[in-house]
Length: 166
Image (tube, rainbow, N blue to C red; front, side, top):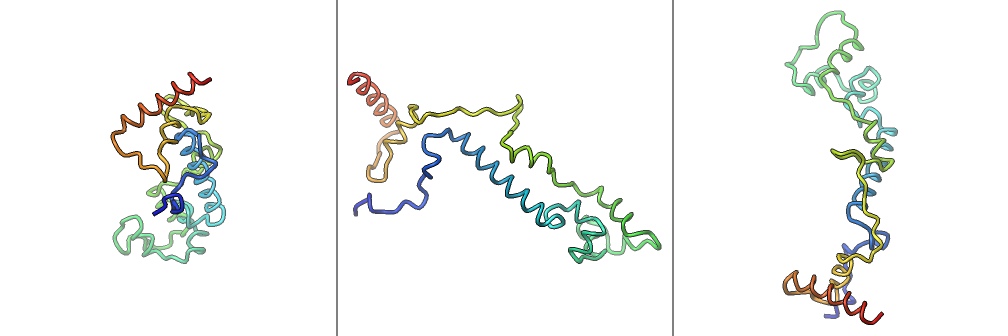
């Protein structure tokens, strides 16, 4: 079978070729954060349990007190406490619910990723690193086979040959 004609369903998108994998993952994470922010805007009560635990959320999602009790692990009938306003009940019970951290999601959506030592910085690859040379040797029409050491040595040899012919 001619491997050059075979479609590679998971081939690397052109815009990622030659880029650092960390930078690509960071860009993907920012895209996901932006998608999540769009969902939060379009579905405020469905996307955040804390927002759902409001009178507006209760009306929008059409749940009742049994659902509230089940959601936070209370026994049935726990919220049936006389003439206590629904908004106050939900406000008190919402202390058991962690809100969606939209501030962090917004930060990630702008591409600002934090690590233990502060903001993460990614290597700006030119596509001419040794790893890129190794990756270029692995193509659908060539079976790299053998030991990974052979790929490494082949990439080094190619660099030496390129220097000698320059």
